[in-house]
Length: 346
Ligand code: PEP
Ligand code: MN
Image 1 (tube, rainbow, N blue to C red):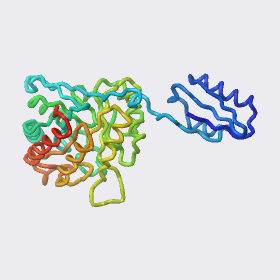
Image 2: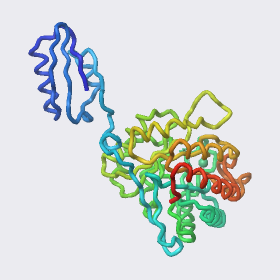
Image 3: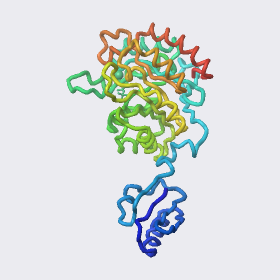
Image 4: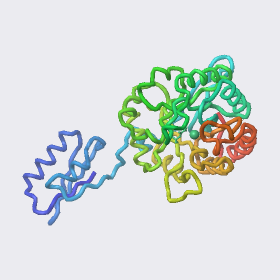
């Protein structure tokens, strides 16, 4: 971090500012020019509040040289993080599923858990086609309070039934920390786009021992997403999977705009796995195959896809859900793309 001091500041005041900064654990190098003095801060500047410093009466300008995130930063952890999750029980055949560093994870399932038959049959079909995780929402963040809100605790029970039947690890969204006790047997906790900056929740999930699937808020920058991951990691939980799920733009043809550049950009800045959600990005089932292929080509570590046995009758997000048959077809194509990119389905 570099701090430009206002012209004409007495040397004594600069020394006292530097001493105060050193108390915060950084080394301060003072460069006194003819008209301007500059302080160079070396060491762990993550805890230095750049905004507060900018407001200091002696300070002209503050320039951050290093990124404000540390644990999520690739510079401090050059190798790719791999998240490993064991399948469950006899049906899993003791498979360990992996995401990251060449292991491509496919998470598939309905937007929402609806009935035992629905979730178990979709789980069986997506497993047969090669999915490594089952998704399904029990607690649903809906724009309208009059829309289907998910089956809640009962939905989680049904997801666990599907997990037992197939051995597939389950991924489901936690909307509120008050629900956490119900999530003991959930394998990956999803933090939805709307909660990406729920900082108290992120802090609490830092103490949790489960992998977190962190979805990008629809108006969040890469740095904001990485800082959200940093909140979780700072608490001691390093198992974070980042997810690009489309952002808000002026375009209305698609539900959101898939920011495919998020994949290489996030992977350059961070060692965490990055996956793509083509379903919520497009909002249109027919576009899901094209965006899934784009995800692999861009270097993603996985995809999360909505699959429904009867999209027309789905209680949530039918328009963007593909059928199990379309999913099986898609997987055939994606296997070829994975091979080209040196990725393995895991
Ligand atoms: C979801 O995956 O079910 C979901 C609600 O996604 P998002 O938070 O990205 O909108
Ligand atoms: Mn959905």
